[in-house]
Length: 232
Image (cartoon, rainbow, N blue to C red; front, side):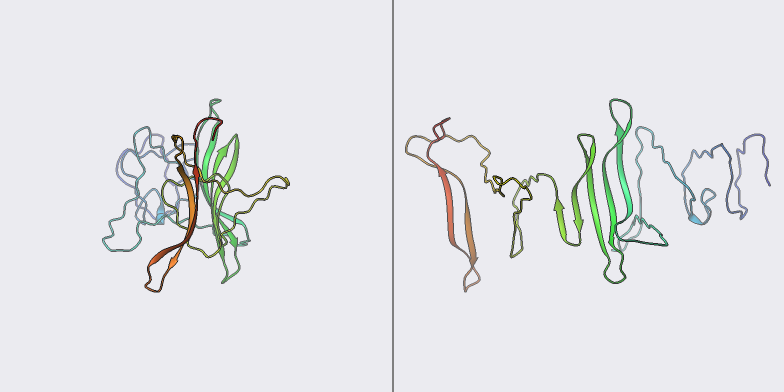
């Protein structure tokens, strides 16, 4: 045993003991915190327990690899070593927290990995992104074995290409007057003189001909003949 009534200010601890019990005190390090087999802070590169990094107001947390090959380094690996894995087990979560105006810690957004199916050989996984909506954490994006589920309005700035043979627009609303709706919206104020038309949008049906050239085989368009308020 080593008993100290003061501070250990110099030198190093090189013995092979497994852990340091500091009771209610802390171990402060003002230099570089290094983990590895030779680190006195984490024998054999393992920290048993929680780890909090206080970066102050200007510091950043960097993960650096000096590997010069094309391999995928550095790697952040999260491993839930469960002795009884089950379907729908959460594997890990990254939470983004901040205070509200009552000085309470709130998780405003988080990403979560999940094991949907743990059957050997047919494993399925899922990745979810949630955010706070009116005080409730709500999943907005989920990537799973069935595809991508987006439970929030989606805005795409730029061209959108869907490469599948079948696309379905589905509404689960039980109101008999509600139906799936596709809206083509020209978000710009337009003016049309008397007798003229303004194109609002359309659908074009294209395919390849025998020369492997893209051809428009059919189309329909919508135009407005007047843009005056109440006289459209």
